[in-house]
Amino acid sequence: MRNGFYIFLLIANLLLLTACGEKPKSIEDIPNIEEIKPKPKPKVIKKRPPKEYNFILTNLDNQDKVVTVKNNYYSFSDIKQPIVMINFFATWCPPCVGQIPHLNRLQKNYQENLAILGLMIYDDIKDENLNKFIESQKIDFYISNHQDKNMKFSNFISPKLQLGSNFPLPVMILFVNGRYYTHYEGSIPEEMIESDIKQALKKIKG
Image 1 (tube, rainbow, N blue to C red):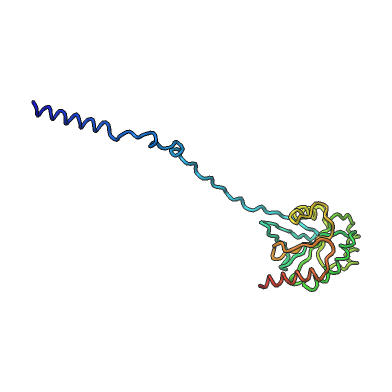
Image 2 (cartoon, rainbow, N blue to C red; image 1 turned 180 degrees about the vertical axis):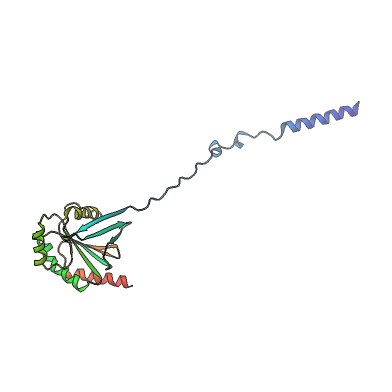
């Protein structure tokens, strides 16, 4: 009888230990609910490809030149020279007219490395009179006379140069290997522009 009683107690203790398991944790041991929540997956931001802008310039002979702008890189169609100058001007503007002989000389002296594109804006001169103007000034560089097309490019680039709307003429912008290099507002000495061209050529040649 006594042995049976001891066996009974042993079995009872084993059952109690199996049912209870570990000691209950205190409230401090319970993890914070924020720690239990699944962490949100980080958002994957997809990079948008840079936008491309195309501007068409047209001269009296209906010869187009396309300026393509992408990621602040300016590509000029049919131009092999590494340096490009955009010249915003008008035929009625005395400083613009006074700048033409200097631009002619620069175009002639650096024709292998420099291409000048004249863009007429704020000018309603007729084609016949423009032809006479080009001949009288002996203009030796490309002239785009299409006002609407020229203004689209002007409206695009003027905020980048902090020129504001209806900026005074002339304005000349120098690009080197498709990148903005410098710009000039108003009448500028030829020697100053030539100095910048020489510096740009040194940069190109390394």
